[in-house]
Image (cartoon, rainbow, N blue to C red):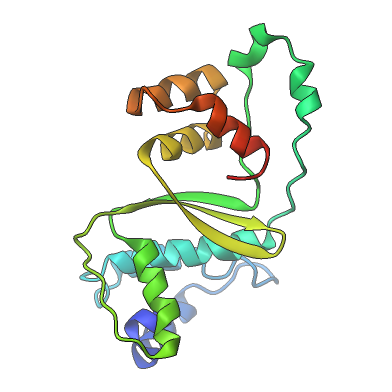
Length: 193
């Protein structure tokens, strides 16, 4: 996606500076370029295009998600066996093939622009139109992007931080007191989020 946004010549020139100074430390290339977003944030020629940092983070997240282990279906019967008194102490985990990101830019529109670029359509994105909270998730072999509202983002961020469920609920309801915690949790457990 970065190459589509900056053009092949600019991308190749940037890569020629990045690669010699960020060689892999192991015999595998799977972790290569893990710090590319940080490099772009500090690179003189991309500092004025700081939305590229978020796109690089998304690209890296997709790489990690693609190679992440598969998640196991959640067994709702196990949850039913737990006494209700313990619910507030439960700690859930996000699907290992997922990532949540917050951007002050409309990154979903930028990604759409990258995809549409192949069909030759001319489209622009207003970088000041507001940011996106997104869930990037792999289901089977497909990676998808889902826009999250503030409450959903807060809920998943707290889950990702391995906070006890009572804290997840409290932090989420502080953002939106009408948020349907039970409904959203159910969607998460059923793999619909």
